[in-house]
Structures are given as C-alpha cells and as structure tokens.
Length: 80
Image 1 (cartoon, rainbow, N blue to C red):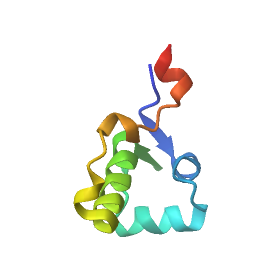
Image 2: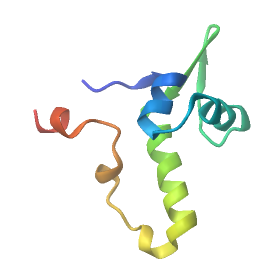
Image 3: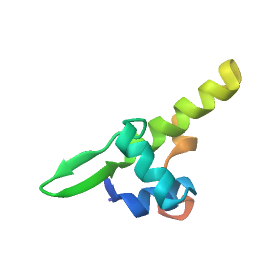
C-alpha cells in the first residue's frame, strides 16, 4: 500500500521544494492539506493535483500527461 498522507517536510521533498515554500503553498491553499488534531498533512493526491495545475498553467494543451505518470509513488514500488 502506498503512502496516502505526507508530513509537510515529506511533501516538500516529493515536490523538490524547500520547506518554507511548501509551507507557504499549504498556508495559501495552493497545496491542499488536512488537519488531524494539531498535525497538518498533505494527501498524496493533492501533490499530484498541484503538479497537474502547474503543468497546465505553464504548458496549456501540451500538458496532456497521463495521471499515472505524475504519481508520487516511486517507480520501483509501482512495479512490485
């Protein structure tokens, strides 16, 4: 089973972004997150959505990438 929720630092690593940038994306709502008690988590599909939105905004129609190609799951884990 793949990971479904990421801590903000983990989401930052998945996106190859700095922690401060990722926290700003979460705070602004650009990167969707959920709160569990006092903890903030980023759903795996929210990372995929964010990447798709960025791609579409920058590439328009050329952004027709299969959703599976944008998965945060590692290629090795996807093969097993």
